[in-house]
Length: 618
Image (cartoon, rainbow, N blue to C red; front, top):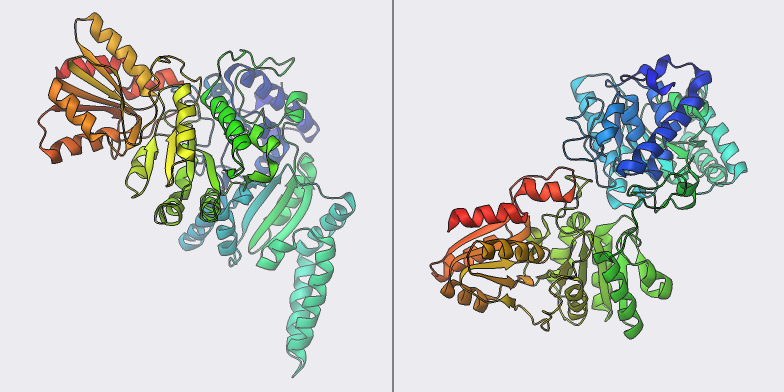
């Protein structure tokens, strides 16, 4: 195998050009085999194999810096930097991350995981290089999807002022450009980067500018005429007009062509954008047909592409999807907003049934929230469906544009809590903390699938900002006999005994039930309270349990600082209520990647760990 010759960075330079295509094929086969077992980001990685190979053939690692936007397409980069063995434990606890990690390799220049950051980070590297007088290339790779994020344009605006080399790769796996335009554009890209062309252009401009009275006017007229002609044949005029040289489009699966354009880009004294066309999922038919499904896939059967394990029970996203479809059918004022996550958040069915009331704004969470605020101010009922870790990108908009005005925007927060294999950047363990300090915000969390349905319906008719947070994965169907109507700011008392009171929020009610059963088997009397609301607190219930129990235990799938438990303890202290209260929450640290069960145990929020804490505090 050619792939076996790659043991460390830059080994690809030793591979004969005649074997490049074979190496690309072997890399794809390797990914398909490994990810069919472990799961992971398949389609995006299959699409950038040749692009990554070209980058590693042209540039010198770790001296040169390659920064991957989001980073879920960095698997080939990991292979080519000697991490083949790491794929046996990809995204497992203690194993290799599915994203670039600086601690993992000095060839990983920047930790990523969220979208639209690579240009900003790369610009920082480029400026630091100049300040320190160092000599290396900086290459930021960003996808066409990530380029919908506003942060990318803020960085582009800043990069346009550069007078030193900075390369941006636009990995475009969605936009189609006609062959004629592409051919002319490719020709002009090569022409404009030639030294003779740049010298000629500079010389003519300087000579004309020296003509008395009319010189500057002639130069400006030529510039306008040239720009008009270029607008007709070059698709990158947007970037050109910003002052960023545009090269491409180039076939991202043609390694020699990629090498040629990358070498041209490396000559430019300033910011240059290389437009690369790729096919997401290339080389594996199921992924080519369904790139969205294979973006982040669970283990699958290679022959069919179907999941290795059939899912029997509905997950929380499925429940939300069904509720949204029903609400959309009943109320014409209901509108749905998402930031490039229609499938992931369960809004696909709503989009299909009510396309005029569905809005996908791209990877632009800030815009999504303020857009929803405008919809609400105009009398509609917007529901913003978003992952917990992505919502924090719109914090200012939640605080200023929604909550100050008390606008009735519903935040359906999916993936709240520990999500598992994607690691630190995706764990939804901060939303209670960052939302609870905002005035006018209400925060809810359901104990099971029926309560999620009830809460979304309650939230839709709640005339103020409100968030409903729910976890990733299979929807809990226990405790179905307990379904008291949702009442603002009120808990649900499930089991009423004495000695120990477990006050659990959302997904932790299921864990609390397990804890209660274990403690009861040891002779303890245990009450179980379903908190329902992280904000506001049910102060009446808190007073009641404090008066009848020697130990109160709060349970939440959120960091301890600023969390539900901390708010409960502050209430008891402020109110002068003497009761021993301990909080079960995630420590003040980032949670790495691994299976959810392992991470529950490692963070101390699994049933066995909670029992130990409770018994130690009795």
